[in-house]
Image (cartoon, rainbow, N blue to C red; front, side, top):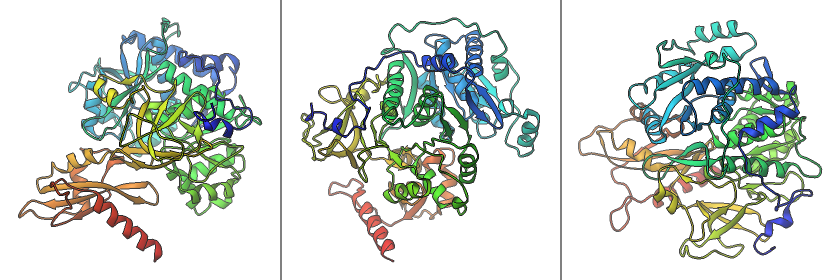
Length: 570
């Protein structure tokens, strides 16, 4: 056992690897908490609180409203929402109505939204009347298979709806929305007695709860099929890691600052599902603002703040950080991108709370590894496998065998949290599966004798920008559409704030006029998401190539590494 699972000896007291995981409907997480803690505050948003009883009631009424629109088994409902109560209500309502949730990112370019609607077979979309959201999705009506838009507004979930609505209108943050048969008000969705038709889930391991899209090194994004069993297992795995002795989180006593966007799998699982399992009060912020976060932690005695490295860097860099009392924090997790050691060390000095790094991915719901809050920790490691997960390293040169501890290979994972496969893409599913059924992650890692994992490289050509996967191939395809571009290659360069940023190296066509970074960004605005946008440009007479004439990135990465080293010296 110790040879196959060396991480068990590194588990904190009270945490077991061989926990029993009960696959079940995702909505049961909310049902159980609402039954046990009905009057406990569930959501805190813009001065208004909803108890777990009220949240549960809203969900039931939204489920009945969705069923009146035809939502049921086999129907896919898109959520194109920021971090507001609408998301939490809609997510569970879709599942209770018998449908499947499809998450949409407000960062996506129009052509990506169009692809996802068609590929996922989304018929109903839930969004808000925000200028940053509604026009993009309204443009999909008549252009795609999308049949209905359910539109809410932030004001209706606030303590002062009239004042908030007027303020948002004055700031031109909202827009007028359609009033035809293709549009339904979110408030109208809830205008019923809540007696929806229940749909039993025959096999939680088979029924898809969420289609969560993830990028690919080539082609369009792929939909990871996350079943009810996958997501409920991930929640149980997370809970097992914090239910230690002493406990990291205590049921019914926590306040979680939820800033991460819920369309991201990390926020969905950690903030929403784990937060609700813990009967925590979830304090919702639609966007990250360092000063607002510092004020909220201090004023409301927040106990948990899951984030990504850029958020923690921004908090520590704020000029007034020392003015705020952050000592209420006891559990802060960092995911989405590698956590710089100096950021982790300084955060603990400032707050007294250790910053725990973990690893996971969309395809794993996204549990994978955790760093114990109490007990053994190792610098630059993303931790040890969570309960009921097996991690092994595959030989990159010979993928028919696994490697011994301490050897560098492709990280492969097996567990009840691992996706069913890619939606309508058996070829991609097969490509991501090992000879014995483990998921190939594309991350190159080493596991030491204590079971701690160290990510050292990637097999996939991917850039991590503020926790989002950015694939150079997609950027290159977009840049090639520019009439002046003959050749282009994109790499990730170090970015103190975002972790990495995309840099484009371009060779122009004969006689073409050069262009600036700002001009290139303007050209790419409707082709790339905000998180994908090129942040640096280098126009060259020639680009490096391999002996057979293929564009080569190796030399460019080496150049950038030398520049970074020289800058560090100076």
